[in-house]
Length: 161
Image (cartoon, rainbow, N blue to C red; front, side):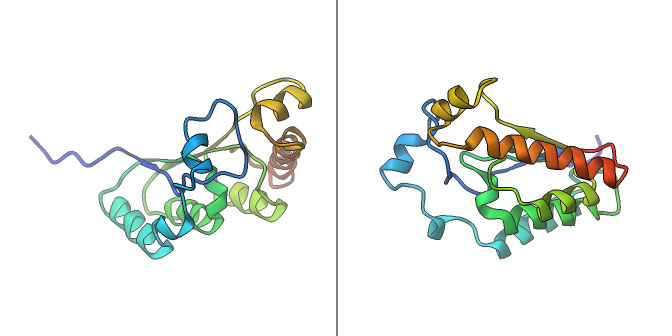
């Protein structure tokens, strides 16, 4: 009989992507030019959405994409920072291809206490992964990002993400 707030928010900052994955359902719409930055929500709108979610005490936050969320780094980093600094326990995850995250952002995400980051890796070898992802060097970039997270978790003595 009591009010039950939403438990989880799934946020999609963009449908644009820096890769051309052969299996992606959004590849054709991207080729056709259907996903444009100018048609995405502004950072100010994302701030309002996050504030509304925090007022409702949403516990789980999932930042994913029909594209690569880190094409909107400003939005992703804002969401994680704002939610992890909330006055109640939260769980925040990001799903990414891992190719656009900088060393600075890795350190910041570890420091903020991001709960999980899931990397899309499709093969154990660079050649197969890069072929599936439609981009040379994608495997090495995501591998470097994973290694940076391991390094900063060790340096900062954190268990997460």
